[in-house]
Length: 315
Ligand code: PMV
Image (cartoon, rainbow, N blue to C red; front, side, top):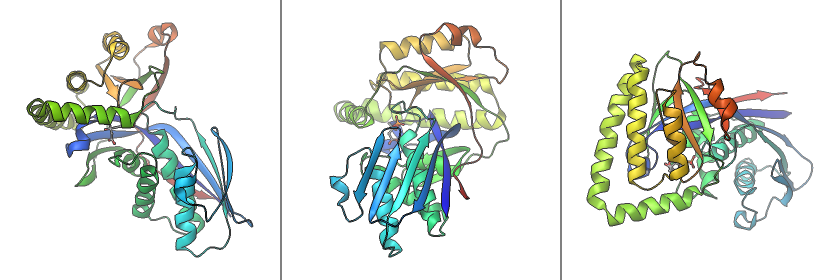
């Protein structure tokens, strides 16, 4: 049997960084996907192939010895093999149209799709198990992940997420459209999260106040999302961008992209860790942004929020 799973990337619409400190974040699954195809093999190895390369690793190898780019997938396969007392290996093929290192949840979507595809080889499609396995796999390379990216990739749609409380789906029939502008400055989530931790340590009162303001902003944004009030959502995004600037995760280039795209959209902000990566801006489906798209030096993507999360197929 060949097992195929598909999982969407994500944007953080509100609340990145603050979510690390128990605040709420709002995330949306986007129509860019990771697809993972797996099969049981007759060897003792775990075979991994992706656009980043190929590797064949003995299944009793220690996870920590595996190259970082393959580690989460090896971890998932090893866990599932051990749990099912399977005496052979697994071949894993990873394909994705989510840009890497851009804050669009590429690594999480790959982990979710891999977990779903491999568990399905053993007839398990339990979403909770997929999520737990995917988050633990991601932790082998990003120990401090809040788990938000994997959660929205499993659930799809728009979610409200808190580290301790978990997530709830925002039920809305409204369609949300965004343009994503990739600054192509590769960032390290870990480094930026660490920088924010230092900022918090050195400016604890300011940070606490910003957390409260962000929480109030999110309440307002949620209400506007349910009402499909795009003007207010856009203003909330611009406000959120100012908070991100205050905690030091923006830079001149991101700011200049934001200012430019804001002129022709409802509002814009960093999505994800910042210090590079992508800017998202809220648009209407029929908005003509072709002049911007055709003249900017940056890669742009039009995305819509996807109601469906992870999906599994057998062939
Ligand atoms: O840039 P990304 O997709 O890795 O997003 C990071 C989001 C943070 O809030 C900064 C960290 C986290 O784990 O939630």
